[in-house]
Length: 334
Image 1: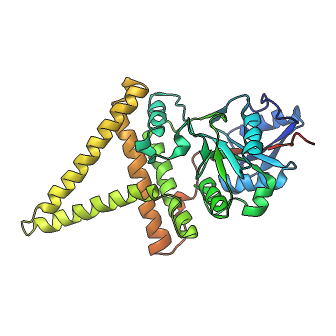
Image 2: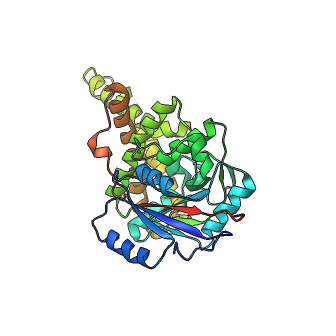
């Protein structure tokens, strides 16, 4: 699919940053490279996305960089649309909306919830119709000079390295722009356990991003953890106050849980109506994985990075799907 892309005015090269894979990917890549001169494979010994992207950036020879990850399908004109948007908008980074496409029953439910404002806090990057300035985009397309100006990806971050880089661009006076004409389809996790782990990592590393920049990019990032913290405090108060026959904390806890379950029910109903009714039974669990996974990860991040002031826990320093690609495009005027 990548090699069948429409050329955006001039030939392009493909740089694949391989995370030292041992599942046969390396051999497949060698077969492709042997007959395709514009494809190069480089090592990513760091085995996380940020180190792979930076390695590809250093190897790239062109003036325009377009990121393309595995586990995503791309429209044939993806490269062309990226380059056009970059030239027309004058933005420092452009990209398309983050649209999910599931492969099986659970994956389809995860993808359906992924496009729901209830799951992602109304993030515009998940709105397939939105066009305009934005806080972050899926993947990205930059002129190489943008990395000289705003820096490369933060290799400390196992997750959220793209959000942090876009935040750095915006707070540095730059512009990030989303165009719905740039189309791709992300394949989400296929199980609730994998989704929960993924969003725990998102929440965990978001704390480090906020710590680095002093303020969150959006207050919605704080909501899941704040909700869990309130639930925990009410639960503790309920146990302690019950010893003295004081029951208002228990009532408040039940009220908070009831309100959340009602919101989940309504969101699941609306999401099923827009997608598939057969997804309704599992959607409440999917929404719970998004919210509670992110919230628990965020609270753990506060404990590690803020309270104990220690490095990242080993359980949050590896990825379950660590492959990524970076593509360089020659500008049309060369």
